[in-house]
Length: 98
Image (cartoon, rainbow, N blue to C red; front, side, top):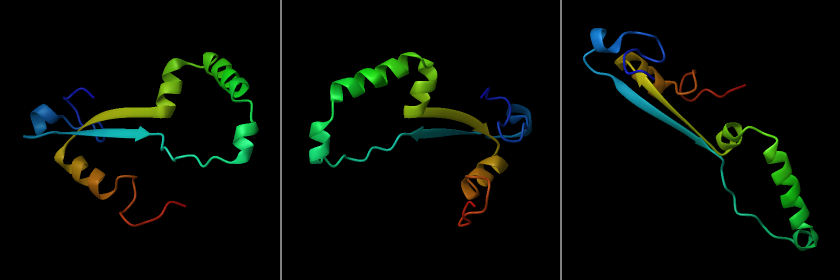
């Protein structure tokens, strides 16, 4: 995002367009409340936490953060703004991914 060109089509925004748009995309991990069972109380939670922390220490901090929440900002020309709103996943509204 540089504010000068459309991030979708590359068109110059400051020269070729009177207006530009900014789109913010936020993708985050969904949270579903857990249902506790008797088995959960039998688990060694301390060992599971230690294992998880050890695995996390071997990974890149930015990669771990992106698994929780990823933010993207895009500059758009009017045409690409319309296209993004009509086809947010690159396909016509209402069509299902296969």
